[in-house]
Length: 143
Image (cartoon, rainbow, N blue to C red; front, side, top):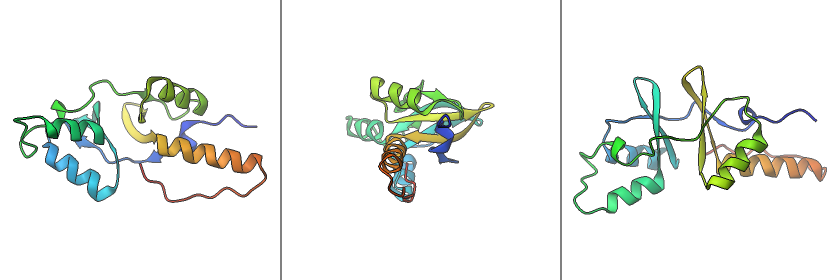
């Protein structure tokens, strides 16, 4: 069996957001795209991760105005970063151990993908179906 890597299951070309953009914009993008994770960039360089949970927590704090508060104030500054050829089992294991919802896939300094728990479950489902001799399905990818 060939070595399974994150690039086989990741969501390609994820939506990113600038760290200086307002939280309200991040919320709108997440809602419109039906996503829960936004890699945060400055000048094309990854500087953090904003999850839906981070966003909701920050928006509930007294005195926070989502229209003016920048994403950098709510983001996680050191997201879990992996290469496209990272072993699927190692990435999924690390995500489970650290209770992470996503891994940002970076190649040559550029964000090229996002591997989320939904992608991990899709991978697991396909592997189990193959093992059981059933045809794997490929439902629409949603991060």
